[in-house]
Amino acid sequence: MLNKIRDHPTHTALAIGMVAIGLFLLINDHYFIWPPHYSDWLNDDIVGFLFVIDGLGIGGWVLWETQPAIANRLLLTTTSFLMSFLTILQLLTSISTGIYTSWISNAIITAFVLILARRSDTRDD
Image 1 (cartoon, helix red, strand yellow):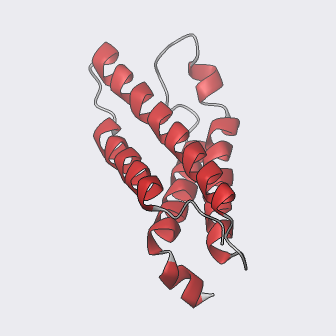
Image 2 (image 1 turned 60 degrees about the vertical axis):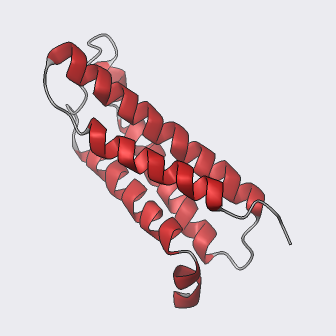
C-alpha cells in the first residue's frame, strides 16, 4: 500500500485535499452566499458529497491493484470540473459582494489538477 502511495504522491495529496474540501462544504451550511437564488441549492450537502466521492475515487485509484488510465482520466476530469466550478463561483462571489473568498487558492489547486492530468499516463498497458 505504501509503495502505491509513493508511486502516486500527487494523486494521494489531491485525494486528501478533495475529501477535506468536501467535508468542509458538508459542515458549513451557509458557505455560499452568492448567487442568492441558488445559495440554498449550493449549500446543500450534495455539493460537498460530490467532492468527498471524487476524493475517495482518486484515493481508491491510487490503491487499486491495477490503475486503468480511463479511470484516471475520468477522475481528473471530474476533479478539474469541480475545482473550476468552485473557483469561478468564488471569484464571482468576490466580485459581486466584495467579500473575499478563497478563489485564488482554488485556482492554484485547479492549475495543479490540470498539470497533473497533463503529466499522467494516458495509456493502459
